Length: 298
Image 1 (cartoon, rainbow, N blue to C red):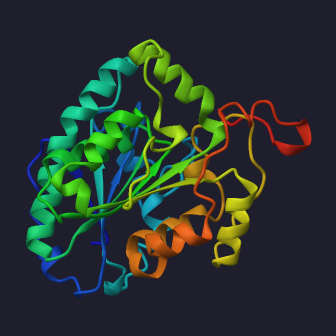
Image 2 (image 1 turned 45 degrees about the horizontal axis):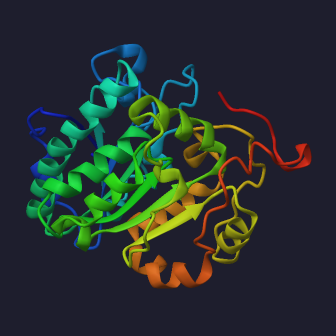
């Protein structure tokens, strides 16, 4: 049982306790959280048939298996356990954004229960509004129950993220904020739609530095060169516009897998000395010369 399906506000699957009890002490538990427009209640947008599945429906666009990319499914007990967390993310953006905050409580209860049963912190990866779910979970989770968090193009505001990081669970977690100038238009639209442009999106990075937070801009040449030197060669063809390259660009999941499953191998102090950390100005990708970009991914 390398992947366990859990949906928000549903009872824990009966086999989860046994699966946690069988885990070797060093094996990771990784919670995967999808973003906007997915719903476990609708077959055509069910995340358990899509990115959270070991074997996604190949006829669906952007159907990349997160659990396989994170190293699950080989049948090795040491690979650990992936938790595929589904929630209702359809509707208008404002509705889904508000619901993501509420779902954070459900995710917090889940990780607190898992950490208590397994005796280890839970690692978390979330894309888009799934990143908001992960951050909101920090407000309600037991301190120490959440370990390393990887946010992919997070659909959240900088001040809201800072508040989550300042919670008891947030102060004991570590966050890698994966950003890209390819996502600028999506960030800008979120700012206008949800708060009339009065607050800035997390794609610009955390406003004030924090010791347990690191911004990683994946379309920055210096960052990609540093990842290559660390043993993580990543595809180097940035797009002008895309919300999905944090999980579609080849090579990135190798970095995420190590960061989540073996955080000691990529400690934040080490990454901070090796990676640039700073983010480029907004619109720098859209305004780049044609030779520096590869198009649009819709």
